[in-house]
Length: 257
Image (cartoon, rainbow, N blue to C red):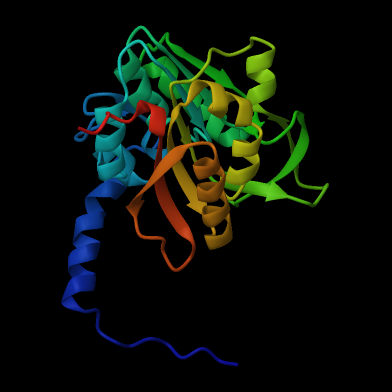
């Protein structure tokens, strides 16, 4: 079938959008810049590592503020599904003399994650090249064409990655116990939470959870509630099933009068 050429004149909104985006093409993609706004203002960032909203400081502004208001100095923060390190950098600044453990399985993201840690001269971050699941095993990941995002796959020909459970790592004394967990693992949230059941039962870390799919969202919330967590939604669940959940254990809530 022959495609019809679109002869429609661009709307004023489209023209305005193009004008706004035009200067972004002048930014050297691989040359570090400073983040210009938000909670990470002034930190070094590589523009090509992620969407422009990151170095502009606009990325997930409400979540940035929530994390900044919650995380205390001297604490331990797990960044599970660290990607290229936006929340790793934020947590590093917030915990001070505390620790950040960043989990990321995809080679492309690990390169930028480590580079961002290096550029910002950070010494309180440990990067673990692993996915987080319900057991220690080798899993397979399907990475998007860009290599920026990935999800678990049943296809043995996909990228093999090491998977770890938080309970096993904690039990072996390989990582410090967490006070906070930020988790964004592209649909594997329930497996990761189940693999951390003992950590959650004993340590009650505060959780910032991105969910991917209505069923996964419901199952994760039910699981956390069964462990004594109270759930607050940061935004309504979207039609595509994406959601943001803030979970805090009842024992850490202020006592009511």
